[in-house]
Length: 323
Image 1: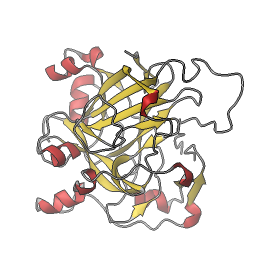
Image 2 (image 1 turned 120 degrees about the vertical axis):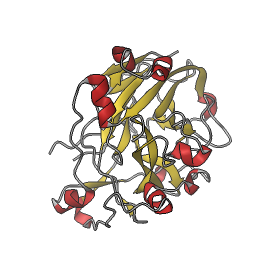
Image 3 (image 1 turned 180 degrees about the vertical axis):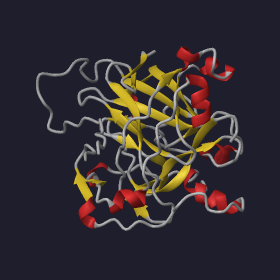
């Protein structure tokens, strides 16, 4: 199995792949499709093994890591890889595949691509719920029926995020960097902006973001499904985080409205030629947090006022999300 390590608030799996979790704006869930929000810094990552005496028993069985989030806070996954040796990556939210909407397993699916490839996929901001857009990842407590897992299965047993990374089969790509640069060099690392129940959480569906999930240009036969690394990422609320670590949770990010009023940038990735995996029929039917509030008869719990983003505030980028 590929080695899993935590360094600089990133999870490294194998020799070349890594992922970090970016704090970001929660976009309005108003039916509009928004450009990409910024990265506002990495969520801190803590290893379960370092807190064995304070975490739930089920965590000790799964191992892995945990990150702290506030209820209704958003995040996106930032991937890093190298151009000469890609990896296939499966992402699950509460044991539901974030690309296909099917129940979680370790097999790559040929008939319906249920994974991403890095490079070229630089990030994932939410579930694959529409043609050319995703529904933003938003943290919600387990046990209330809001999470993607709860909406798809009717149960909320796992929460968190699952990640499996597969190496390519031997001999297809070089093991070390070639002594030349390829024309399509792309580093997936994304730059960041400088300027209830027991406390465990899962990811629910938020507003719409313009984003594609790229088809696998290499083919499923490229990937060595016997050579992989996996990690379980638990999500905890601020109170549970403090009980486990003794640390205080960082303050929440600013609102999308305030961010835009300050004239700060949103982003539009120029990737029309990359294609897009078909939207999942399952995930397209998942109700958003706002829709669940309405269904349960709750008063609005968040500001979903539409935000008008001036065209000159949307930065056109080729591959790397920068400020």
